[in-house]
Image (cartoon, rainbow, N blue to C red; front, side, top):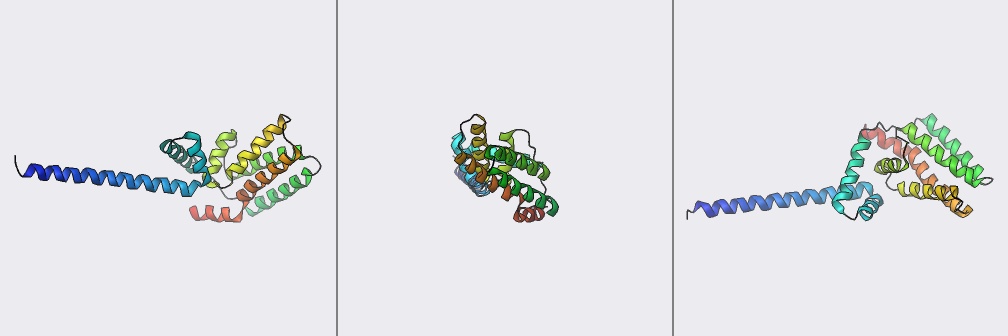
Length: 187
């Protein structure tokens, strides 16, 4: 046996181990990047799918989809108009909580549309929102679930109050100045 054969085998083993180490390193970086970006949404997706690779692939698909959308910050005028509308929704909650919940959901749809999010299907809307607003998307899902229960006659006034709190968290995040600054920096 030639002396070059063991050397060649050793070099191939080192190259293979280096490739595996690099792959593991990049997989860990990918996971950490997605965990950081999506926060609780990463955990929710992982629990829902039961598979880290599948969950991460879904989250990356969301990122790519939202990258192709033209998400814009609100103008100061739009921000003020929406904030005024939100105050009206909150005031009407006292007299008619159910109607105020429907109005809050509609107003959020208007804000999302104005920002550039497609607003057709709720699940897709929540997935899109999760890319830029991962800390409050669960509030949106919870509020929507309560609104659906209300439409079936299965939600109390306290449930509706909780829905308003959930809607408000997303609303404030969508119209915030911080969001506008992040969008300008990303441009």
